[in-house]
Image (cartoon, rainbow, N blue to C red; front, side):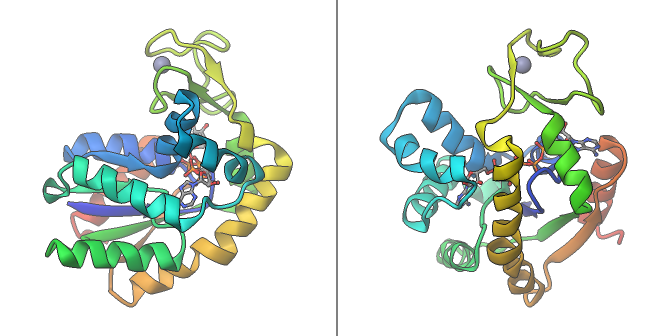
Length: 217
Ligand code: AP5
Ligand code: ZN
């Protein structure tokens, strides 16, 4: 299956993507995670991306589209993929359309995670991520680790993202409304959008998404 996950920052895209990708045996491709890995490895691409990310703005398309394309080719997109955080504006959606068309492939669904804004702010403020694996995500009140600051899965150190400050989150939300939301209409015109109410327990949201992918919506 070829799936795109959209939703505001903090909607739970990364959290859901980890479960959905495992259930469906497809690679989880997150452009945010790819940028953060490049930053921690000190690559040229990471250096280019960092200032944009820290300010809550989008990394320019020239950098992002090439990186996403490379990763999809590496993942052997033929077997499917779950895109998380890409595309993030209409130009990126059009670039993805062209990539898929050139490979004679189509998307199966675009899952739009719907969460009220006050909730996403709470989710981001409490988020803690493992230094060893970005799929190990916790929340200080909703899904707290057993030991403060320590990952339950691997014992790694938990940290808070640089772009999770209140001011940057405000910019990220604005960027989402102005630049990312228009891709929902782009995909609605292709009949691909399914809205998933994403409030409630993590596994209930996964169940809703899986039901939607089976066409039960
Ligand atoms: P990116 O990493 O994609 O961040 P984002 O879209 O802002 O989304 P988040 O990672 O903040 O949230 P999420 O929806 O994954 O939520 P999560 O599952 O962690 O992008 C970061 C930056 O990189 C961008 O600002 C941009 O600069 C750059 N970038 C990336 N892609 C780009 C692109 N294509 N083009 C240009 N620039 C790009 O959950 C949040 C918290 O809530 C966690 O603590 C979690 O435990 C908790 N939680 C999740 N679900 C639930 C639930 N059901 N109940 C209670 N708590 C929950
Ligand atoms: Zn861990």
